Length: 360
Image 1 (cartoon, helix red, strand yellow):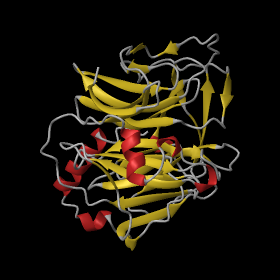
Image 2 (spheres, rainbow, N blue to C red):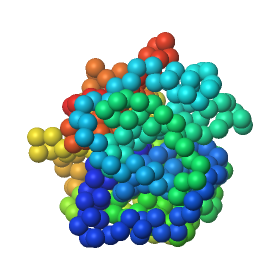
Image 3 (cartoon, helix red, strand yellow):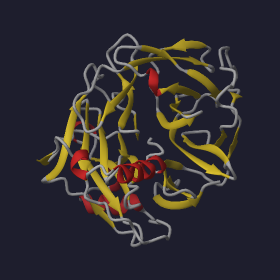
């Protein structure tokens, strides 16, 4: 997730503009070339059209200056039917050999970007695709001779769980995944422009459905979320605890216990989540593998009693939610603007469609 990738990005861009920070500062240390991305698991945007790419196979992060910084004058919805077929045709492969890994919206232009893997197994190759707002044109992102920077993740596990989710806020890139530390579940806060990545912070949570403390369950998706003026990460895990973690506690080598604020049901994997405001209240919209799309009310999240006892039988506890029944087959979710979101859905026949929805 995947994240308020969008709504926070807009605020950051505005803040940087007011502060008079030059684009050159944000691209400090970047060089022109072709980034050696080995795989893609997660995307998110920072300011000035800078796209962050998580490469779990290479245990590395890339920052790419897309140059896509012109604000779109288009206000219409993004809508593309059979997107998987269009991407596959663009990349010269069969759609059965295409895997869409993540979706992000560039707040500078409101164009949509998808990270995909073409091919299968060890022969799979990463690619980036853009969908232009206003025209719905689907095109490959050329990564030859682009300004980029790279940072490697020390002690990261060398597998697909090395980087599970990305989010940008307050001049830092937040990274979730697994490491080779004793507390394998790791969150990192990496200042941008990149200098280096530290060993990260080990995260412990109480997992309601499992009825125990855990340190090896990776965050599947997260989003930055302000609570009483302090930035937290709202992180979702498989089977499905929702946990709040203050970013002020993310120190190199530290071990932090997150506060479990909701248990949203077992036998389920969270896929994406975004934060939005409606009628003066804040909500989290979260897509899931088997429990549909949830609208989670965050009222009272600042002082809610943490979940510290088992929640059995697939039950729920903590923050309340409702399931948006009309949203089915959602595989990817990203915020488009203050009132709308993008969803990538997959039909029973395998067709993948990109559509804009009103935030519920």
